[in-house]
Image 1 (cartoon, helix red, strand yellow):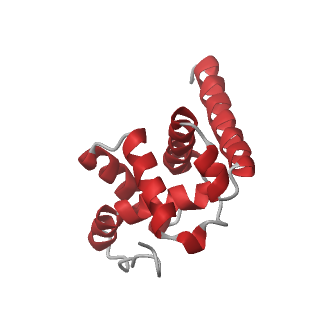
Image 2 (cartoon, rainbow, N blue to C red):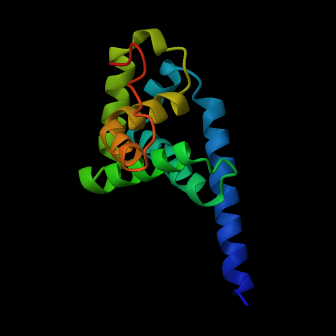
Length: 142
């Protein structure tokens, strides 16, 4: 029988992560909100999105093959490129600056899009291995 304390702790941690991601999404609703965050806040934000993506692999309801392949590709990308929060923050800053038409988009979408764009090669590697259609970069994403 599983240890109920460990099971409860895992559930509680997952719940807190999911809640904190949605709270963050509410106050960083456009580029100017992102720009006004300090380095530590940006780092925490991107790691919240990153952890949320990885957590979805374990607790998400959407367990279709395409989503699983994407999550595995993102995980491989993080390991291979040795991504850290500073690297992702720098990439998100660059994404916002190169895509001024997206300044009205919330940071969660931009962080996810940046990670997806950085890791597309790894995502498509998994897609190819699983016989899935390869993904293309988002239109007009620089």
